[in-house]
Amino acid sequence: MTSKKRVLIKVSGASIKAKNPNSIFNFDIVKKLCSQIKQLNAKYNIGIVVGGGNIWRGKMDSEHCLKRADADYIGMLSTIANSFVFKDILESLGVKVSLFSALPVGFLTKPITSENIEKSFSKNQVCLFAGGTGHPYFTTDTGCAIRAIDMQADMILMGKDLVDGVFTADPLKNKNAKFIANTTFFDVYKRKLQVMDLSALTLCEENNIDIYVFNILGNNSIVKVLQKKCKFTHIHK
Ligand code: UDP
Image 1 (cartoon, rainbow, N blue to C red):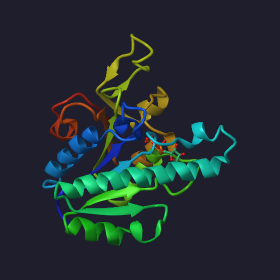
Image 2: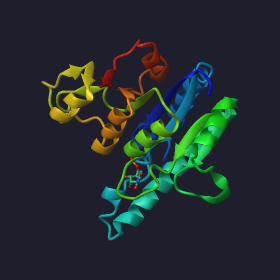
Image 3: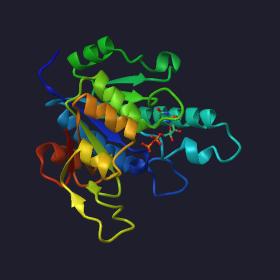
């Protein structure tokens, strides 16, 4: 195993959603995120989990007479589509990438095994984890927690697109909501703070993986959160 710190970055689909309704991706944002990842790859072993919410959300979209499980498979396929966009843009910047998927799509992606992950990191490749958990009824937050365990991540950088971290209430709806810079898993459960799915939180707590919640759309914010030079919420045991 290399001695670099291991970081898993969660990119929600919403943060790469195009403003133009005729397009799915905001490529400018993806390029900005990828150039930060290129910079960080020299110092860290990086895993990335991209959501699919810019394309499809199973729970919402299954309302149109779709079976919930099928709607969720479409959601997982959306995360694969998004991961391909990240792969190609990273590669265009000269970054080597291994694309894994929890949902097998033949020769297009690699199966997620610890051997494959170690091999990728030893070649200085960024690991892109697509397909969420591979199971319907979950979200990519839980996928993210599982992949963090798979890659023995030291931390998860949980990117948000509308807020700078965790608040006492939804700051978009409640102007009295207070920012929380530092908190524990226990406090998140007790105060029902909105961070990520409970299943994902529990996995992180049990496996001692700290979470940093930050605004991924801030200027150079992935780099800055690792340097502790931007606003973020640190969740720990
Ligand atoms: N999904 C799923 N199982 C998983 C991960 C994702 O069924 O393990 C489906 C689910 O329908 C979800 C969609 O994929 O709504 C997109 O993922 P998510 O909503 O987590 O994306 P994000 O909000 O992070 O963009």
